[in-house]
Length: 272
Image 1 (spheres, one colour):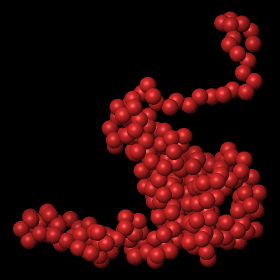
Image 2: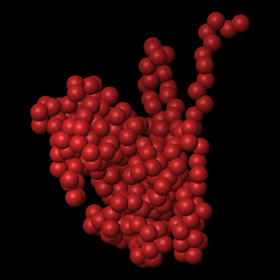
Image 3: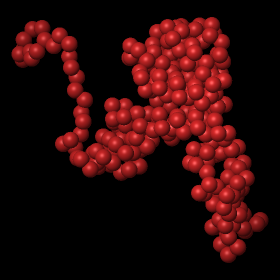
Image 4: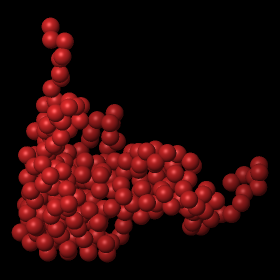
């Protein structure tokens, strides 16, 4: 038996060459064939490096520009977003930085404005392509049932806002900017057919729908798009968590409910 057994890591993403005097320290690190610290650091953007990690090749200028737009659009959903609010609550309660980010990931992973909704919307792109009739039929049908042990069944078409009346301005602005960068892809088709698709869905387009269309245009799979969305949503959660941690619980923004037709206080023991 070999006393110096060395387990192999099977990956096409990463390769390390050890230092001559220390087998546990890397002298060079190659990502998809590129020397990370010799060829990439200081020469490529973070977004370009992410694309290299996910897709195994350098992005074109159009891909790089569109991912930059998407990254900024998704970076901070704002303090009213449930995932950001979860990170804020964790931080103001004294939890660690990791706990705040895990809270944001957990809440932002679902099918109501989260990464799972992007996953489901990307699956629709794989099924429907740019065929309007197939899309309308798909959107008019109830969302398919799933295994409830992992994800609860979706109650609205993926990529559309179940609570809004009209498509929000930031969604339209992001859609316009991406369609200008990628004029021949699925994102441009979405811009052209948005009104018809919203009519078929019974709901206006959401940011998750824009993200899914952009990622579908860039040939991201549903699993790749879900993972990237989880990552891109974290900066805002981190920033708001840090801010609330400094301000303390007395300034924490709890949401208020405004009841319509509020009957007012009821006496104890009174019959309603």
